Length: 263
Image (tube, rainbow, N blue to C red; front, side):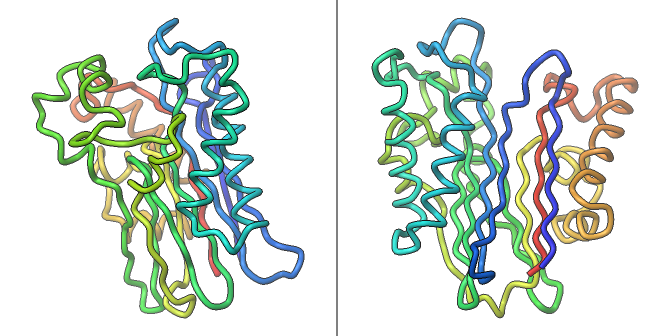
């Protein structure tokens, strides 16, 4: 089995809000992958005394522990319990009802000799490669389905559509959001490799259109997660120098994280 992971902050002046982990059980059979993309709030407008990296570390640690130790729990139940545990850790000091309370996107994968289980919440991506090289992208596309007019400003998105019916969902303080995640399971024999990417890494495909998901997984196999992130950074710098043709009003560099697993 081959497991490689890498992450890079969008700016050296700001902490990296992405969080990744991969674990193998002592038995040597199966494994767990967790990838989170913390949502950056406006300064002093999130009702919480803790920074986003505190939240992603707490939530990510709970997800890694519970998905490995409680294999009797479905992944949605693992996410629900992990959100509740994280919320309990700062409920006494923070306003968890605030629309911008610390939150994150989630990719959670668990596999053994029988099956590969997965969960995706919000706009990080999971890629599953079959034995014949066919790549399937598992995506929660609610953000992509929102009308452009609703994305006019971050404030509009947060107050009207974040973690609300008809909008999109992230892991914040409400355990019930786990029921909104995209979940599934495939036989282990049907998965040769898999990859998880935050949207800072999916820019290679989704923003710069350097290749489709099959090509992205091929790049991960050849150059590794760090190679993919390095290529995204090169594209971002070139686009910024050319007048932001692709990035437009988006960040020049976003936090990026990627994991590649060859089973």
